[in-house]
Each structure stands twice: as structure tokens, then as C-alpha cells.
Length: 94
Image 1 (cartoon, rainbow, N blue to C red):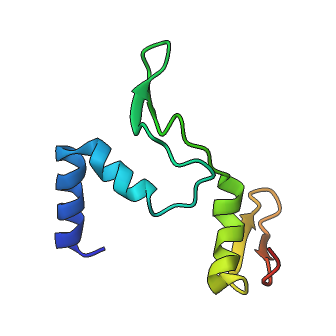
Image 2 (image 1 turned 120 degrees about the vertical axis):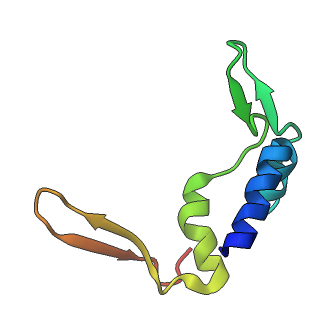
Image 3 (image 1 turned 30 degrees about the horizontal axis):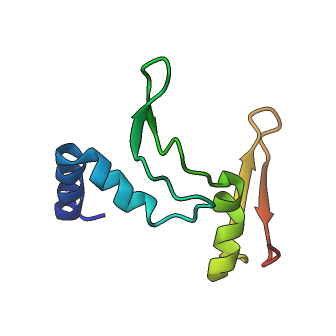
């Protein structure tokens, strides 16, 4: 992201956090798109997208396969114990 674009987004997020994050949420696949962007739970803790439903495992892997990126490395496991790296490829199988 270029600096001018970054500053534009930072200003927007600061000025209108709910509008900014709603626009970002529209770029994702949801089972149920949230109607409320920011709410508070019973303990007064703020929650983003509390009434929305999505599958983050799908978003992390399968969505990329559907976008034609199945041949790219999906995950890299870098073991601090064995010092080995394992690359997981999905090979287009969603």
C-alpha cells in the first residue's frame, strides 16, 4: 500500500471506524453478513461483527483455491525444534 493510500485509510478508520470496518467486511465471504459492526457484550466489552458468521478456516485456505491460487504454498510450518520447514500446498483441491 502506498503511503498516500495508507494515510487515506488511516484517516478514514480514525474518523469513521464503523464505516471503515463495514467496507472492509464487505470484501470478505460471510455465511451471515453482520448487521451491527460494533456492539458491546453483557460485560461492556466492545465486539466487532458480533452478529456475523464466517468460517475462518475456509477464508484462510479454500477461498484462495477458488481464486485460482491453489498451486501456491498455503501454509509454512517452521519448526523451532527440528529447524525444518514444511510447505503445505492445496493443489487446487478445495
